[in-house]
Each structure stands twice: as structure tokens, then as C-alpha cells.
Length: 255
Image: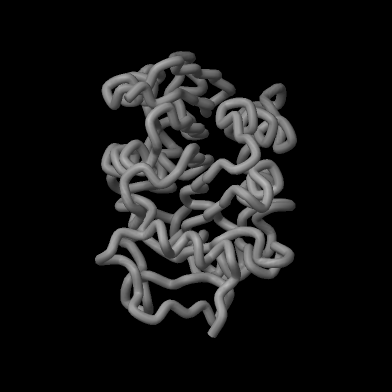
């Protein structure tokens, strides 16, 4: 079976022990998890992501609605999120970019247009239903979709010029391990863009913080927790924008 060029090039970036002897993608994405490999869920939100319903409404209804609640009425909309991701990643022609927990690929597709045919956009997610929707919505195989473990990325060190993880870090059982791997797969000077939860100090929002974590399995990061974690991993030019119960964070790997 001949694989799309983008997927073929993405497979070349896998660590040797992760690379299938005879790669195939009958559903349009490379499956590194198989039937028994779905990571343990951290709660209701992640459970819903693995269903067949949410991928159908994710890009148009689910993600914008939840984002609006979390970011507040005056917070950035989805179009602004795309703009923020572009600014934080600074993608150019020929770059390689990894979209961690890519869902149906709404950001990954845009990254592919920015890096062009000379570059490579890879989306990795644990949900087969999300990836199936991503494949269906992505023309011409311009994105390489891989079903794999986002917390322990299967790629070789220094494989990508940029890594994006929007609306997922707070759902991981081991977010700092995930961040270690995102750092590991970046080239020196590589950029990272994160959109995740943020604990705030005002009394009404503190109640929402507590409810979010208790009911959904979502971790709520302290205001300086993620920026400090990036600096501990040698990121420089670290930027943060807080919006409601969320934060956008970016930085450049200084080593």
C-alpha cells in the first residue's frame, strides 16, 4: 500500500522502536496504539473525546462553545485562537510542526498551509474517531495523522521546528511528562504554543475552578505553573496571555 507523502515522511521521524515494519494506513492515519492501546482516561471530558459523537460537532459547536465558557464573553474567539497559534509558532515555508492532541485537525490543516509542500504538519491524537474526522476533512493527504500516545511522543529527538498543544495539556494524567516530550522533539530554537487552563484568584471564578477539576477530570494550573515549567526546560521569550479560566503560553527553546 502506497502511503501519502506526508505520512511517509512522518513515519521516518518515529523512533526506531515505534516504527512499524510494514506501515499501513487503511483509515488514512497510522495507528500506533491498536485495539488495546487507548490511554487511561482522566475523566468525563476525555471520555467524550473518544466517542463518535463529539468529533462530528467538535470544530463547529463543541470546541467554540466550551472555549467561550472558559475564556469568558470578552475572551478571544476561535479565529483569534488560530491567530495566536500562528504568532506563537512563527511557522514558515519548510518547517516541521507537530500538533499534539490534534483532535479532528482544525489547527493542523492551517499549519499545513503555512509550511507548504516543503514542510510537514503532523497531528497526533489517541482518539480514532477524531482522527477519522480529521482525515475526512483534510484534502489530498496534506497532513500526516498518527494515532499515538500524546504524553509519551513516539518521535525522535529534534524532529520538529514547532509544537502546538491547544486545549489538551490539562486533560493529561501526566502533563509534565507530556511537556518533557514536547521539549525533546523540538529542534534548538524551536517554538511551542500551549492553550490550557489557568487558576484565577477572584472568588466566583475560584468556585468554577474547583467544579471544573472535580466534575471533568480537568487539571487547573496555577497562574505561573506552566510558564515556570517552560523556563525550567530552557525555554526563553516565554509569553503568557490569560483569558478567563484559560491561558495561552508560548516560548522558544533556548538550547
